[in-house]
Image 1 (spheres, one colour):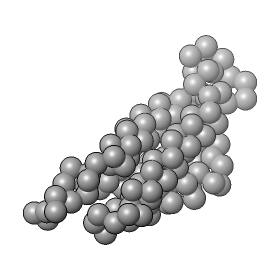
Image 2 (cartoon, rainbow, N blue to C red):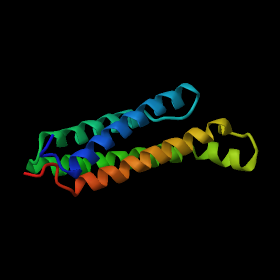
Image 3 (cartoon, rainbow, N blue to C red):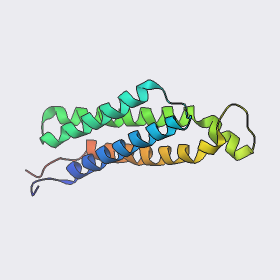
Length: 131
C-alpha cells in the first residue's frame, strides 16, 4: 500500500460508489422505477474496469479506467432520463405517467453516480502507483 498513488484511491472510491449505485438501482427498481437491463451491465462493467486498475501501472489500465468512466456516465444519463417523469411530476404536483414519490431516489442516484463519474475521470488521468 506504500507505493499506491492518488489514482489508485480514486479508482477504489469509484468502485465503492458504483457498488452503492447498483444497490440503489436495485432498490429503485423494486419500488417500481424504470430501469433498463443494460444499466446493470454498465454498472458491473464499470466496477470491473475500475478494479482492473488495482493491477498497477499497465498500458491497458488507462483504457479500462476510461471505459469505466464512460459506462458510469452512460448509466447516469440513462437512469436520469428514464426517471425524468418522476421528477417533472414531483415538481409540478401532478400524477400522470411517472411516480413522483421516486423523485428523491432519482436525485440520489444522479448525485452518487455523478460523483462516481468525476472520481472515475480523475482516476483515468492519474497514476495508480508511485513507482
